[in-house]
Length: 317
Figure (cartoon, rainbow, N blue to C red):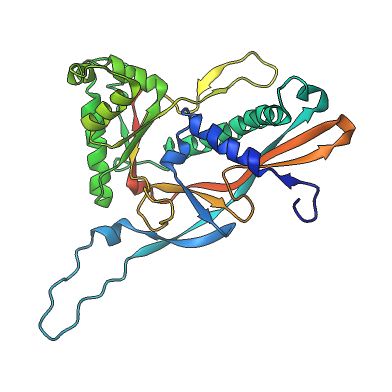
């Protein structure tokens, strides 16, 4: 039990939640902005700059002299984690519907976790598909005159052009591209891409992603499949993609979650003192409604660190 409260952490449910998250393939936000675990809620941190990565130092050394010393240039950035959470009650009468108490609890928690992840996914998508952050020709290309829903559009050339923008901006090749499920279907119907992959014997989803990665020259191809209800409360359901089909994004993402100084377009900061996992599960009893209440929460900041490590494309008219 947490000191000063009647709330109890549920580590067993937390482990089950991690397994549940691993199966939710529609969520790609934390792949594009990987989690960095921090002991501080808010802080200033040194971010490697593109200037330091691309400035050529004097490496020549004369006999008897010392070596040129370089101080890796950094720029001060800051993060500030905010708490996000939801609660859901499990009525005592509902437990009898399941084989075990744990099954009943897991069914309740999984629903809450799905909504927590959906909200986080939307925050990441809004950060990356953002024409205010990614603006100007170095960071944004409007391809709406040759949209991806036109089967004759040279999608491969558009992606390669965006890659070159990133390379020129920071000296690194992007290692990730993301777009919506709608745009994946457009890619599958694209004449040039169909011709390029026509000799793939058995085109499973995994082989398609690998083939697209090879065509684009980008190892990580992420497809956002999450859907949310865009209708106002009380109105009829209206499904919409979290990742808009108007855009596609290429960028440099961190490959080691522990190295904050690793160049990347952004990270998700997780304040581990408050929420050791993303997310955590807690419970408490509420006798007034004869229910166990489950709380799922995390303290995070999904942050763009340096937009010059990415490039946004408008791919729809």
